[in-house]
Length: 157
Image (cartoon, rainbow, N blue to C red; front, side, top):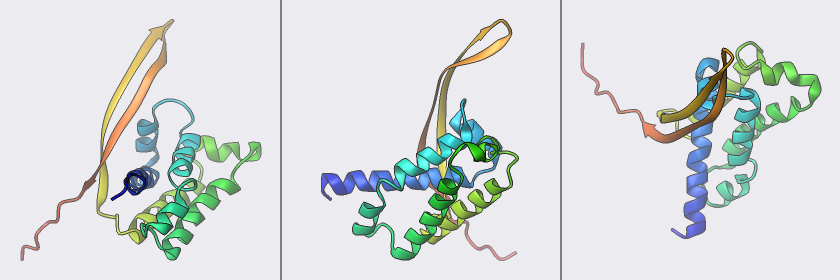
């Protein structure tokens, strides 16, 4: 595998991780992102791992046209909610009904990609300060790795 193919493969793994996070309930999404604007960060992470790389994923056979179309549907949903008039969507990861659609689309993408049996193992590092009774984030990072669910044997009951 060439260096470029290896890089694209690693970026594809990052895409899968971000789809997993997008498929999670809001509380887990907020925990994963840490501080800041969860909706914006989730969409930017997806964009960085998908939109900028999708042609390479296609050319290397990591996705096909059908999968591309499904991933584009998720990207389009984010794009259609760009702008100040959709702040309720971006700030409403827990409350806005369209986030249900985001989660379902992300699950559908994982299934279409054959990655529905994958999860992520996350290690968090963070640092906070407390001044005048208020919490201030100094640093937050989440390091994740893909893990495949172990097959459970069929045991007659």
